[in-house]
Every structure is written in structure tokens, then in C-alpha cells.
Length: 116
Image 1 (cartoon, rainbow, N blue to C red):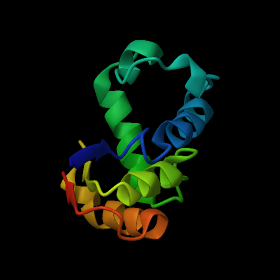
Image 2: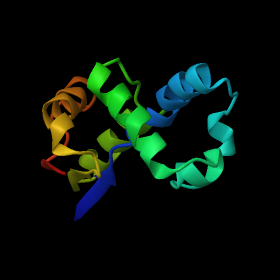
Image 3: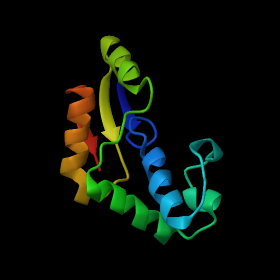
Image 4: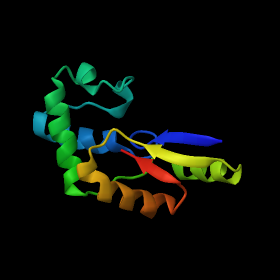
């Protein structure tokens, strides 16, 4: 079976790093546990442009983003079961090289392809 897996918040803890920057700059104290939707602008009560601005800043800085806990083990188990895995992401192709490098560093060739 071919299985598509999202990168952010399934494989990579982007929200954790987003909130660190956002809270520091905006003087807020949001925590990942407060997010029960991928519409971060609804939780933060800001427009989407602000979310995109901070997200692009984080992704452009190439800071080390940790994998989601147990994501590596979960991906390995799916591969052991014979599944073909494809990463799907809404990230801009501006971050393609960095995203692929991150996947190689943390998941070492476990994915058949990456779809941007």
C-alpha cells in the first residue's frame, strides 16, 4: 500500500518552534496543547499573513526542528510492514532542498518521494 504522510506536525514539530518565536516576539504564552486545529490563525486570533510570515522565517532560518515523538519509529514500522511511504506537504518549494535534507537526516531514505 502507498501511504501519504504530512511533514509538519506528523513528522516535524514545526508548531513548537513557531510558538517559541511567536511568543517571544508577540509577548504571548501560547502552548502547543492549545492547538486543536491546523487553522493556527483561529487559535491565535490573527490573520493568516502573520502566520505565514513567522513560518517562513522559521523555515528560512534552517534551525534544527525535532521530529514528532515516535514518528521515526512509526515510519520504520510502516516500512517493515511493506508499505511505500510518500511525504506530502503544503510547504513552499522555496524550502524544498532544506525539507528533503531534514527528511534524509531524520528518516534516512524511508520515503519513496516528497510531494510539495
